[in-house]
Length: 199
Image (cartoon, rainbow, N blue to C red; front, side, top):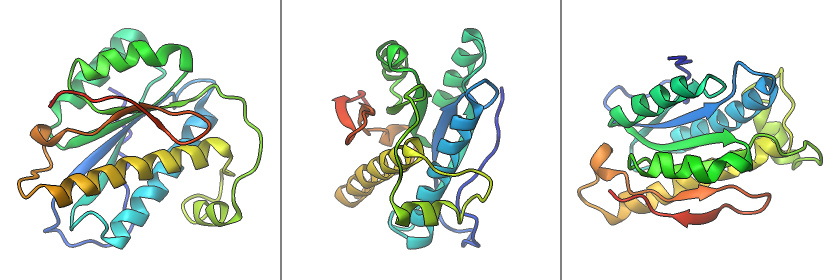
């Protein structure tokens, strides 16, 4: 089903750490593959920083990246695979703005928290020097643009929401029953919350 099996962390970790996952859906095998991989490394950077910093109360975050440039029936199978994995607590989707509302319904009907970034937004503008330097520590073959910085911010937003949830709950289990994250659509500015999937 196009699993790329890409995991964040890249540093030795204790095997006893419990695991939760983020899934990234992006058109890795399409004409927009360059933008998909630009976003991929932004997510990997955010997860590596959180894993190294121990920000999530001891939880290790892994990344499961799936190709989203496949035909519709394959996309449905990708979504079903994500829904069947109890360790995935958040989905990040790179998709055109025109498709995001319909996709939001698809994900929330399966109780999958999802955030979106516009894969077709025209490139342009620069990124902060600090972000660019840290991004290059993950990959030296792709230069970060505004999409990368936006996806990085979006990933950190979802992780901060999860951190609050963990700290507020003594029963957080990191599985399907704990999926109570927000669903959002990304904009050029801060992510805008547009819905809450029902646990």
